[in-house]
Image 1 (cartoon, one colour):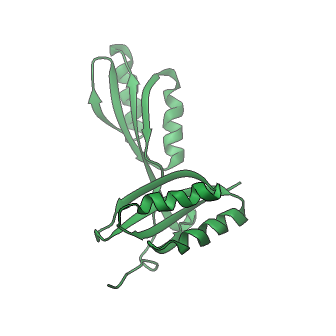
Image 2 (cartoon, rainbow, N blue to C red):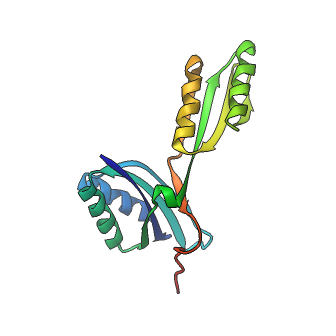
Length: 167
């Protein structure tokens, strides 16, 4: 199984995310993650989809997504030409004795402590998936109470493939 990151520039209209994700469910395609957010131009939304399958399925996904009415541009974000990031929020159970160790691990990974309570801490970590997985691996001695991950979002490097849409 291969993995591909697709970046879709779509019109910011109601139901567009539902139509894009519906295409995947109707065709039985696998989505690892999907993120969406409005661009600098509020008329458009950027959707990042991480999908996996064999080469034929991934090629079909690209073609089928490009046919959707609201989709203005489809780009494959190749790992060597792109920057990927993911946001992870982790609520960890801590005691007074274990708090310093967790802070030390967080500092090594440049994670931020964004909330501290008597028996828990919430840590915010941004990075590529391997960084987040490595951090979570080091938390094996702690009890993770809650975990929320955004999924990958990304941009291609440089400005040569930026899409400018005319009115």
